[in-house]
Image 1: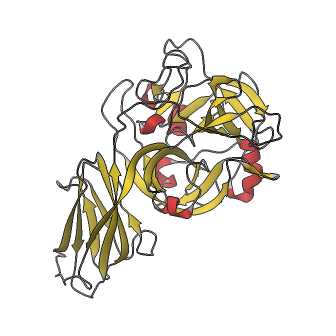
Image 2 (image 1 turned 180 degrees about the vertical axis):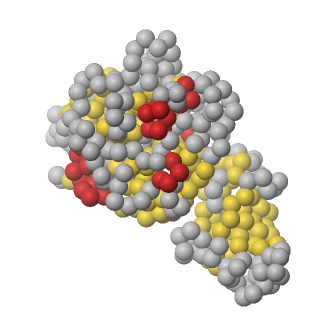
Image 3 (image 1 turned 135 degrees about the vertical axis):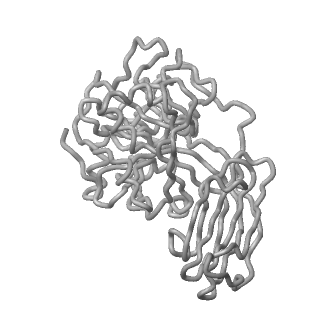
Length: 397
């Protein structure tokens, strides 16, 4: 593993369950990147009528001074047929468009993130019918961490841009369905990682329960695909696409409750069917073995997509499974695999991929396990497949 100068392995609360002889682990926390702040602005109800060319009939300039990025929360959104709402940066270079009562069809809407501290909210009206309008009641205020978080130092930095391996067609396909997740929870904004899985529902997203466990968190979700650089070691960003979270399909708590839970996963649907564009990863039930090579595809610290292919910057040690079928306090018995690839806060929810098939064999969720803080931990996919049942289309290999 490597020393992480920009991001750190966050060591959150230990999972302790009295009366078990299993070693403890530390949940790798979502990466906190902002806070939800109250804000008040609204349209008249109804808002002004428009014309055939659908001019802007109402606009709010929303400012959260000093924010590194901004998200706008609207409630009571209701637009007349033929009208639409745009939310954009001040230069209107990145424009989000909404109609009716928004993507959730209930008037509740979190905009996608906009760089900087200012967003423009505008209603374009055709004038055919009368529309209610909206109320802005909160903003997501992006912040920069001033002091470094706790970190685990385990040698040199082995993470690489995914672009370093996309000449391998199998790898290129496997990394496409992996997304950066930005969501609101408990008055703050957090980052995790998630991925599209082959499931009964189109565009089924997999992440950790300790990232997203509530419908309100899913409703605030921005899943950003293709957030990566175009060349190995480069700085040019690739074009991205964002999708809103939909319905939670199933979730399994991070800690055991009696004989249940302890698998730390959530399945939810994404709006807009991103699977058609970005593909999906097949989950695998196959038994894992020590020495199996892996691809650990992730967004560490919310950074552009990277891969744990090597354990070290010198590229002398390949990332691989170091232990299988392990038990930890508070976690489903015999469900854990360990490996020494690098990770950080924000890597939670990443797929661990078998290079031989491109299938997901485990779901990353721990940084620092047992008596070795340099080992990461993942829930093996086989028990997740068993628990999810027909919601996931799991392969045998």
